[in-house]
Length: 435
Ligand SMILES: NC(=O)c1ccc[n+]([C@@H]2O[C@H](COP(=O)([O-])OP(=O)(O)OC[C@H]3O[C@@H](n4cnc5c(N)ncnc54)[C@H](O)[C@@H]3O)[C@@H](O)[C@H]2O)c1
Image (cartoon, rainbow, N blue to C red; front, side):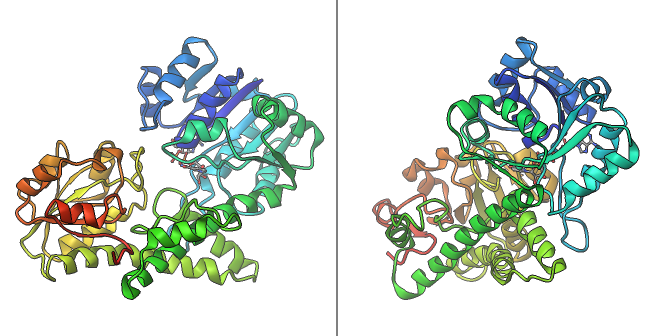
């Protein structure tokens, strides 16, 4: 099949490369010429494990192309994917659909022959109807079907998630379009990956409901963690104790500094707005949004309290800035709020992240970005583990202690155990573990 991918960001690039690896001929399009030039020069503009090799292999085998010019690729495509951003709209919290609609207009004038237009971006219920109306209005002669096919990949594990998903969701009433989608995902189909074919609106809602549910799970365990601290319990043991119940499941029960990233914050907010507009409030989701926002700021208070209540003039080392390990994505990362609040309290911040420092530099000021974890820790008055990159899991604690002005370690990801830290003479606090 011939595929045109409009938008070559995290989702477009990974999906494009994986579809090419399935054997399809894929052209990834982006209006950002710097990105396309980089890709054509063999550089990957994002950090995603395994992506460099996957892209290189499929480019070499003439199945993967990059361009800023959508014309030929869209004209010849069996399926055109829209994988552009749907950020929070400034001012009101709804999803900003301007990129999706602009892409739909662009596609409309170009498609030839029966073409499946697939919305891979996360979009509010009813967006597919609007995309269809835009194409119909711009090009009344066009033969096409608009399909919703939300993406569930996780940054940092994106290739595996795309190639071995728990399920593929396809939202359309059009039989021809279903055939094209099945063909596109054929290798998964042969692996017996469940393919859920449903109505477009249901498919659009599945994506938001999935993300909101996961956000609920994280926020729930975060609140239980706070309770554990107050009542002398251990949240990791609570997580295990409840997670082994199959009805609950053990994933997404790791207490931490609050969720961030490019999806959960904006998608929970957008879902709340969709529900409010439909007159069907989602009180649980609304609470989750509020609790999570407050939590990120509370993490800075936790650091300040542990340092004796006053950090003016003190130096704090942060290990990890990205919203999670194995990505350079800084969107809505808890580190942003933590840094802001520590700086407002008068602290100087030094930081190290294995991949996200360039992105962090765009959203943080006055942070000294360091060459490695030990460089960040040098002469700091405390060290805070913010993101659980593997390289922070086995720090040389004698060296850490020697480099610090005061032996304080605040572990917002529960990477270490309190006993282990005590053995090494570090004063230690973590999340939700009274012991
Ligand atoms: N990042 C994730 O982990 C993830 C996971 C699942 C779903 N999603 C959803 O997928 C969508 C894309 O997310 P992302 O993280 O890949 O975004 P991104 O910002 O990384 O990439 C979007 C790309 O689209 C390009 N673009 C915008 N309008 C364009 C146009 N008209 N023509 C060509 N290119 C255009 C931008 O230049 C940008 O490179 C969003 O709706 C997001 O919610 C993201």
